[in-house]
Image 1 (cartoon, rainbow, N blue to C red):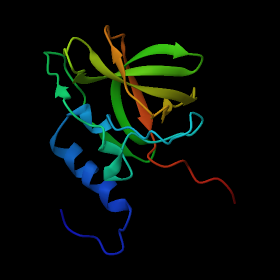
Image 2: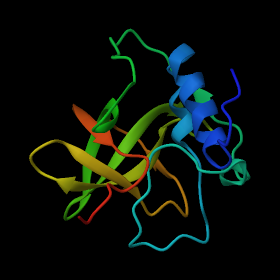
Image 3: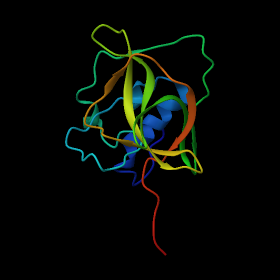
Length: 152
């Protein structure tokens, strides 16, 4: 990966974007941030390596299901995920990763729908992951890695 001058804190996000170009392993989104607030919105990519401190034992799951490649666009990261309703406008997205220790379910992350019109979601409740035992239908979602700029 070529070094870009002045990249600083964006370097780790850029590394993850490079990984996504070569892999469809959704464990990339299985990071946690124990100090996060429940009300904050996050992207799917970790801002810093320390977000993976509790990472371990996750196994990618591959089946015969046709998957769509990740796509980074001006609307954010486009990805197809199995979404299950959780609470009001919050959903559990089942990642294609088996959950330890018995690997009898999928890792889940929480997403909040932030726009009804263009399938915009944000990662919320990143303090922990959850286990999903049955996956619902696949939904196309867009997740911005940074909140959109607001103002004049």
